[in-house]
Image 1 (spheres, one colour):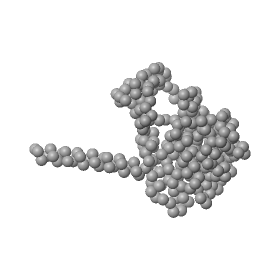
Image 2: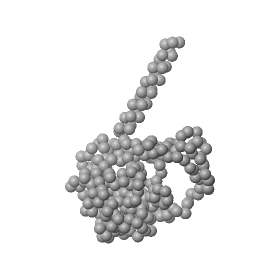
Image 3: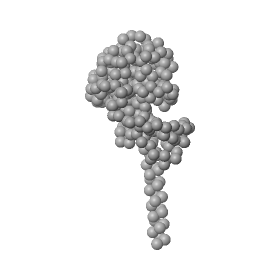
Image 4: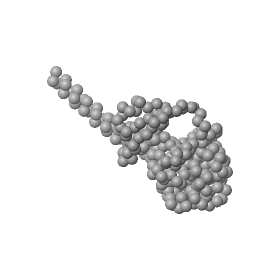
Length: 279
C-alpha cells in the first residue's frame, strides 16, 4: 500500500531521503493522516530489485486473465475461465485488514455492486493476499460479514505461491509488517466477458454505480454518463498526479477545485483592479 501523509512542519520533508526509516507520531484524525515529531532513525540502500518482489510477467490491458487454480469460499475449485460470458470485477483483499480505507472499504463497495447487478451477466471476485491464513472457511466467514452471495461473488484462495504470483502479475505485492499486517497497493480490475482485462483502477475512490455504468457502456447499452465521467476523472487524476490524489472522487471534487481556483482568481482580479485605481 502506498499512502500519502502530511508532514508537520513541512520543512522536514526536505530532509528525507530514499531509504530512510522514520519514527513519528501519527494523527489519524486528519485526511490524509499527519506525521508529527518526525525523526530519521536509520538509512539503508534502496535497490531497484528488493528480494521480496516476485519475479512474474505483469499483465496489461487486453491480456487474458491468468487461469490460476483457486478454491472459492465454499471449498470448490475455481478458475477465471469458468466466468467466460460474464463481466468480472476483481479486487485483492485480506480478511485481517484493519484499515477501514483499504480492504474493508473495497469489500463494502463490492457489497453495493452485488446489489446493483440485477439481471446482468456479471460476477465479483476477491483474491486474498494472505493465502496461508485465508483458507475457504475463513473467507466464508468474511463473506458473510459483507453479505457475499457465492453465486455472484467469489472469495478466492489457492496454494500460497501461485496465489501471490497471481496478485503480483497485477502489480500487487504484499509486504508483511508486524504492526499493521500486510502493506499492499490497490488494483480493481474490470474483465470483459471474453476474459480479457479492460481496465485497472489503482485507487479506492471509485463508486459502484460508476463501475456499473462503465460495464453497461462497454456493451453499447444506455449508461449513466455522469457516473462514467466520474470514474474517468478519478482514474485520470491518479494517473497524472499519483497516489497523492487517490481520494479524488470525480466531478464533485473537480467542482470544488474549480470553485476554489475561480474564487482565488476573482480575488486577485479585485486586488489588481484596486491597485490600478489607486495609481
